[in-house]
Each structure stands twice: as structure tokens, then as C-alpha cells.
Image (tube, rainbow, N blue to C red; front, side, top):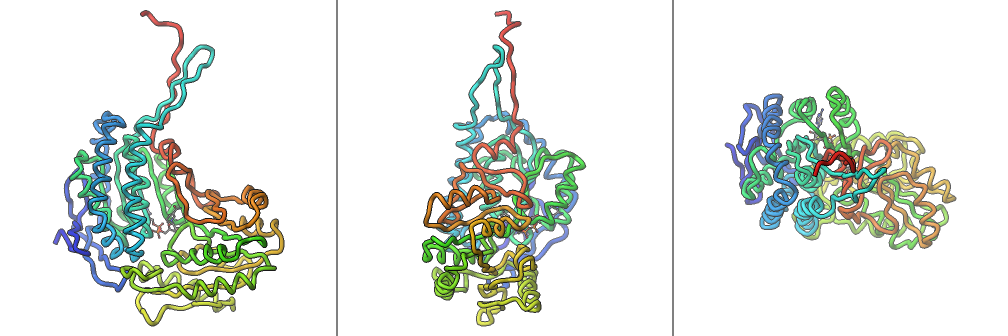
Length: 487
Ligand code: NAD
């Protein structure tokens, strides 16, 4: 069967290559994390599918590039219109496939999917300009030219949201695209492909190939016809991709994992601090930006812990389709076992687990309770490795300097949350934190105009505004002499 019905939507299980549906002889099984319901058998691509998708994208490139930002923008806005027209379907589909909250898909995520596309379409038209400047009478004319075929790799924790952070700027820049969605969440990308067709996107400009990272993903990365590789995922996979990309010197952009700090200074508003800290359980901890290391000043640690406990005890775990649910399941049995493995090893080491620490037996399946590890041994696995589940650590410090050293003391540098009542102090501390994004007295405020990315092992490059185009486009300077003209 080439289509399946999920949450009322007809979803094609085949790849999307050159404006056509293409099946593979092999498939992989897709299930819902909500209750392990079987969703369908999905085409499992390999070398042949990767090659034909890149060939299609390469053939479609010259015409798409020639269309210019305005021509491309019209089609991109039509795609965004269709995302909005199908918002409820997309929200339900994504929730069935990845188990994130339906209410946030409806109100936050899917509207942002449309916005991602509109924003970058408009940015290419209105903002990609650099003032002409002179060098000894010669003018420097800077342009962002289409670069070719971009291969995009996305994880499962926010599938269409993260895909469109890449699809938007890549297509707006005039590149053509081959998207490889994560194997645990292939459905929204397939549905989105149908919307691009309806919007009139020319065949071959956008392609989707499905399957395992080590199979179709590896084949795609190794293709010498790629102009760009943009990857969001884990550090170990990024290393494999970087090695493969090196053979062809294909430029890469990496958005990777984190073990971000949530720092509560002595002068913090404790209620705000506890609210922000508890938010780090959002999406059942499957958020790259999560401040999973809560660092609290010793003098307020007990009062803070009490408020944290109060607020955390109100988190309602359950079916992500229920409006009242705050956090849902882990994405997949393999991931659930990984998260549980971290917690079991922490227990075996004698770490102090003061909340959760086990599967939610009432719900069964892939639901793991929000967990808190208090004062973990410095340097231990639970406080240095990314768990990517509902597991937070709480540690104390006695000075701003110690807080900064602890905050910066991992291999990651994706984000940091800082809670303080004093602007000057917050400013001084924030300046010394090493991370792509610092949120002061807030969390998750993200403007597409702003740079986004990770320091240290959390990534290479930045996305957002012109930074996205600096990656996807070939940035060119045309230097024109004042002499030699015949007219
Ligand atoms: P992952 O690294 O396992 O997989 C990501 C993607 O890469 C998937 O599509 C996968 O199929 C593909 N892949 C795997 N092996 C490959 C290979 N050899 N060649 C090519 N492609 C391959 O990551 P995941 O488990 O899907 O996602 C979780 C990770 O993503 C976490 O580390 C999280 O922090 C990170 N993440 C980062 C951001 C960010 O913006 N920085 C956002 C979301 C998630």
C-alpha cells in the first residue's frame, strides 16, 4: 500500500523524487510513540534513491536559481499558505508520529512552520543587500548567489519545524533540496512534499528520501554533487558526516546537542527561576536547548528546591493529544531504553535521585517520569552527557565565578539560561558564558532574525537571518574598476 491514513490524513509512504512518488523494495516500520500503534511500512531508501534524488535536484537547479528571489518567493508563500490551510492535519499527524503535544503543534509549531518559509522568502527579497563600497575608486558589489544542491538532515524531536528552518532559507537562496527526515518521524515531510506540488514548486526542486541514516543518509552525504550539507542531530552522527563530507570538501552546517546550564543567581526571582527550571522538562526532555543542569546559589538552594518540587509535581504526563497534558512519551523504545540506561547507571553509582527515576508504570509504554538528580558527582556521566530525556541535575555554587566555571564546564555550548534580579550582574555573567544563545530571565524566545547555533561541540555555523544565507548561498564580491569602459 502506498498511502496510509494517520489522524485522518492520507500520507504517502514512498519517497518524493523529481515530483514523483518512488517506492523502494524494502521498507521500515513506523509506529506511534503515544501507544506503539503501527502506523505503516515506509519506503527504505539506499544508494539508488540518494543518487536519483541528487540527480533530480541538480537538473532542477539552473531554472530554480534563474527564477530569482521574487519568483521563488511567490511559490514559497503559496507553500506557506497551504501549510496554514492544512495546519490541523499537520499538527495531528506530527503528534501521532513523534508524540509531542498536540496543543503546541496547533498553536506554536505549525504556525511557525509556515512562518519559517515566509520569513526566509521575504528576507531573500528585502534584506539580502550589502552597501556598495569603494576601494581606490573600485566598487565592491556583494551578492548571495544560489550554490546548488543542499542535502538536509533532520532529527525526530521537532521534525517539520526543524526541516523548514533549513528548507526555507535553502530554497529562498535558490538552492534545490534533498531532505532526509529522521527514520522515527518520516510522515510530516512526506505530507509537506504533496503541499509543495500543490503550490506549483517545479519538479526536482524539493525531494524527500526516507530510510536509515547509515543507509540512505550515508549515501546522500557521500554524493559529490552536493553543494551544501546541513545537519541537525547528535554529535556522534555529525562526526561521521564530517568525515564523509571531507572527501568532497562539501561545506557543512551542524546544529548539535547540548547539556545547557540553567543558572539561578542568589538575587533571582525564585518563582520565575522555578518556573523556568521546570520548563526544562518540556517535550519530555527531548529538546536540544534544554537547560538540563540547574545550577543554584547555595544560599537559596533549599527555598528554590521547594518551589521546584511544588511546580514539578503539577506536571501532567499523558497522551499528548489531550489538551491538559504537559509532557508525553519518549519517541521510541530504543530511545526510551537509552534514557532509562542513563538513570539506571546513575542509580548504580549511588547518585541521589530525588524525583522520578523510573518509567511511569501507570501509563506504561514509552512514558518516563520527570526525574531530578540532586548534587550529582562532578564529572559523572549523568551531569556531562546529553540524556535527551526528562532528566535534570541540580547542583549548587557559592560565587558567580564558580557558577560560570560550572556552566562552561562541558564539551557543549548550545544555550544557557540565567536567572538574576540584577541587570548589571546578569550582564557580567552572561558575557562570560560560552553558548550560542543565552536567555536571561526567559527561555525559548527565538526570533528568526537572530543567529542560532552552538559553540564548542554543539555545532558549526549559525542559522537565522542573513547567517542562513551566508551558508546556503555562494557569497560573491564583484569588484568593478572605474576605468576601461568604452561608453
Ligand atoms: P541523530 O544524529 O541520530 O540523527 C539525525 C539525522 O541524521 C537522522 O535523520 C538520521 O537518520 C541521520 N543520520 C544518522 N546517521 C547518519 C549517517 N551516517 N549519515 C547521514 N545521516 C545520518 O540524532 P537524533 O537522535 O535524530 O536527534 C537527537 C539529537 O539531535 C540530539 O543530540 C539533539 O540535541 C540534537 N538536536 C539538535 C538541535 C539543534 O538545533 N542544535 C535541534 C534538535 C535536536
